[in-house]
Image (cartoon, rainbow, N blue to C red; front, side, top):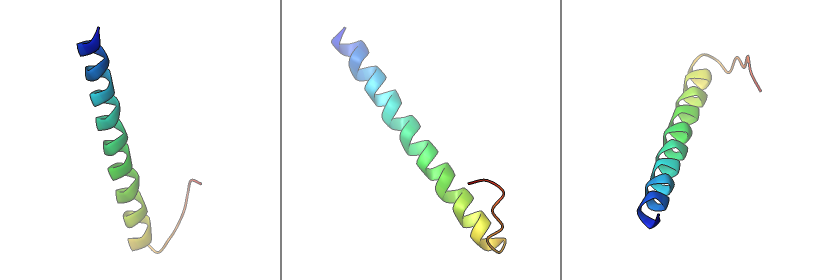
Length: 40
């Protein structure tokens, strides 16, 4: 069970990091496009 718990935590951290990178990239893209925000 401990191994499974560690695996789940690792996957959660990876997902959080990937989503943070994705949103940062979106912000950069929108700033490059002149700050046109279609979503809040």
